[in-house]
Amino acid sequence: MSEGSIAGRVPAYSLAIDAMGGDNAPDAVLDGIELSAERHPEARFLLLGDEAKLSGLLARRPRAARACSLRHAAEAIPGDMKPTAALRVRGSSMRMAIDAVAVGEAAGVVSAGNTGALMALAKIVLKTLPDIDRPALAAIGPSARGDVVLLDLGANVQYDARNLAEFAVMGDAFARAVLGLPAPTIGLLNVGSEELKGDERVRQAAEILRDSHLGPNFRGFVEGHDITAGTTDVVVTDGFTGNIALKTGEGAMKLMGGLLKQVFTSTILARIGYLLARPALDRLREYMDPRRYNGAVLVGLNGVVVKSHGGTDALGFAHAVDVALDMVSHGFNERIREGAALLRRGPAAAAPEDGSPAVPPDGASKQEPGRDTPGHETPGLSSTALR
Image 1 (tube, rainbow, N blue to C red):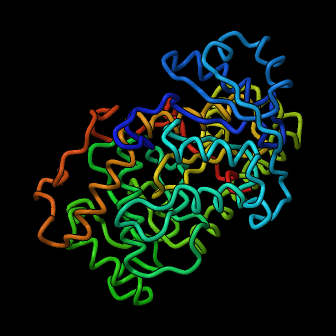
Image 2: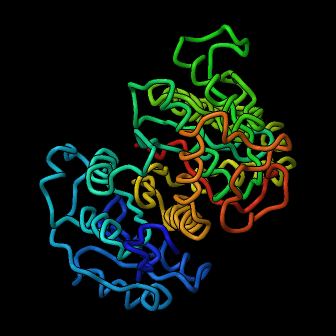
C-alpha cells in the first residue's frame, strides 16, 4: 500500500481509526471493525482513543482484537466543537489518527466525529497533493443505473474553473478505485445541458475538460435530474451547489419513505397490498439503505480521509472502512497524481480516442466494464454523511 507512505516506506497499518468519534462511539466503531476484520482479514488497524475503555471492549470482539493495535488518546473532539478550537487539541483521538497518516504510519484515516474538525485538521496536517489546489468532499449515491459519484459536497464554496477540472480528475480516480469502473463518464452540473448555459466558470471548466485526457469520457453539462438518472458516472459541481443537491436528495428520499408508509397503512386493503408487495419493498429498502452509502471522502490530500456518519451503526461504519480500504488498495492517490499531472500538461496529454486513460493506472479494475446494478455489494456513501 503506497498511500501515505513516506520516502517509500510501507505504512504499518492499513488505517488509523478515531475510535472515540461519533454519537455511538466507541461501541459502534469497534462493532464495525469486527465486521471489517472478517471481510478484510489482511487489514491492520491502529485504534486511537481511551485505552482503558477500548481494551475491555476489544476483549469481547476477537476478530477486531486480532486486527487492531491500541494507542491511548487522552481527549476526544466533541460534536459541537468549532474547527478552530479542535486544531488546538493535539492529544485528541482524531488529531492523533490524522498524525499517523501524516508520518506514514497509516495509509488512511476513518472517523465518525465532528465533520468540520476533521476537514480542518486533515487539510492542515496532510496538505494537498501536487497539482491539486483544493481538496473536495465526495460521496456515492444511488441512481437508476447504479452508483454515482458526486463532488464537491461542501468543502469549497468559492471556486474557479480550474478547481472544477481538478474535481473531475479526483472524481474519475474515485470511480475507478471504489466503483471499479474502467472508463467512468463525467458530467458538469449546470442549469441546462446547452453549451451556452451556466456562468463563465462552468463553461471554462467544460473547455478545459474537453481538451484534457478526460475529454473522451466527458459528457458535457448535466442537470439535477441526471444525478438520480445515472446519466454519468461522476457529477462535478462546486461545494455550495453540491451540498444543496445532496440535502435535497436526502429530503426527497425521506418524503418518498413517508408517503409509502402513509399509503400502505391507510386502509385494510392497503395493508394487504403491503403484505403482497413486501418482498419487492424489502429489496428497495435494502438498496436505498443509507448505511450502504456511508462514508464521505475528503479527496485531494496526502492520505485517504473518510468521514463516517456520526450516528451510524456497526454496518454503516464497516462500509466506511470498506471504502477507505478500497481507496488504499487501488492506489487512489496515485491515480489523482497522474490525472492532475496530465491536466496540468493540457491538450498534449489527451487520452486516445477509445477513452482509455493516457497513463494506465496501477492495479486492475474490480469490475467488468459497465454500470453497477441494484443489489450489488459496492460500499458507498450516505446522503447524510455531512451531518
